[in-house]
Length: 157
Image 1 (cartoon, one colour):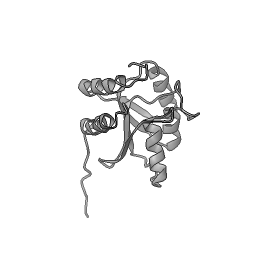
Image 2: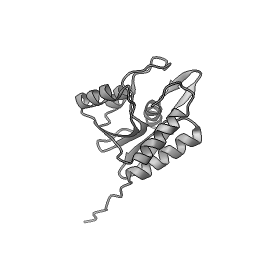
Image 3: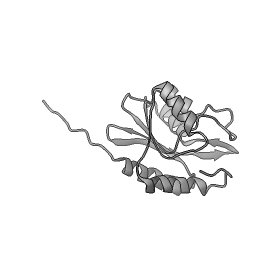
Image 4: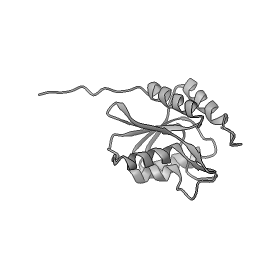
């Protein structure tokens, strides 16, 4: 029998990648799917004619375009805690927690906490059966918070 050992990627390496692409794109927020120890797809948020497409929404759209189905053990990583309500101009898009639940994602890891949305996001994830956790690395949390705060949104973490 051939028992291949599954490679894993550390949270720190995933967030290093996400922070790099968010900084490169000057987007402030990025997200990816990790499957079987590797980054399957990653993308940033963007502003499309005044409509903000959140990184999680953009990522799930990319997976759909590529006909990639979510698997049970997939993990969504995001540099900012998923939203549970939209306060910005989003063109009527659902909040990211709802999109994550609808996609069948059961594991989410984030770096920067959104102090306005954290309580409701955690409660909704509990109800939806989504395992939501913040990375322990304080340096990564601070870098993600700094990238987001550098945007000209008027909203600070």
